[in-house]
Length: 150
Image 1 (cartoon, rainbow, N blue to C red):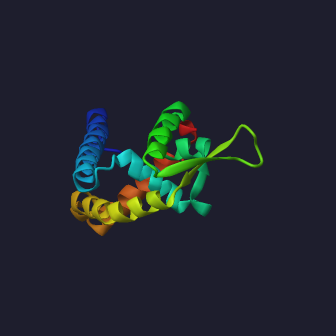
Image 2 (cartoon, one colour; image 1 turned 90 degrees about the horizontal axis):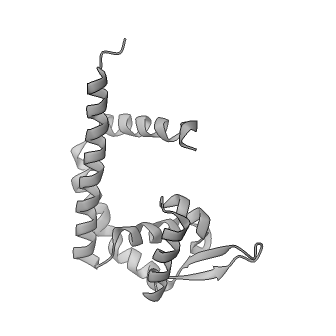
Image 3 (tube, rainbow, N blue to C red; image 1 turned 120 degrees about the vertical axis):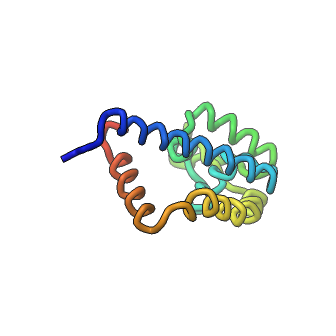
């Protein structure tokens, strides 16, 4: 039997949104203070670092970092001007383009990673016990697997 009222459920939703917003603000501020690197740039570098050969097609990267293709294009252009990424044509599709992490991008990511992981730990992971983290992981995985989000 479900004992939560509609208001209780909506309160959980609002708490999730508020926690996400506050966490992102704090992590962004810490990243800028520590490395002068926007958190979105860090996220792109982290996705590229996880990819084979440090490169992803622009469309795939946009989906991974939850940006529109045009938004990602502008961001990658700025990152390329800073020397953190480059673009490369896709050999199998003339219309396709890869975003490729440069050595400078890899170095920047490695410098920023310890501070970011420390912030995630301090502001999120250390606030929840193992059972809470496991429940959160199961719950959010269930939402992400929903066909309605496709």
